[in-house]
Amino acid sequence: MYKTAINRPITTLMFALAIVFFGTMGFKKLSVALFPKIDLPTVVVTTTYPGASAEIIESKVTDKIEEAVMGIDGIKKVTSTSSKNVS
Image (cartoon, rainbow, N blue to C red):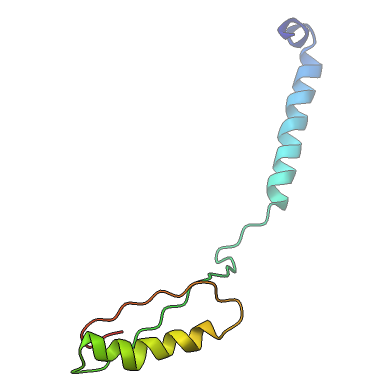
């Protein structure tokens, strides 16, 4: 195979130039965006309840937010954490 490439240098050169040409044309048509539009399937909700314990925040805030969020179509999973003053 390499003997053919050596014996026919013009054909080899034209083949190499064709590869470079089509590669360059393909690269130019490749769409690249600086800030592509992506759809992240994550929502973060943070609430504060000054002076409340984790149990109070969980029962009065976190559970109600979880119920409301689970009522939205397309929501598959909800996770939450409650600690002192923050949900």
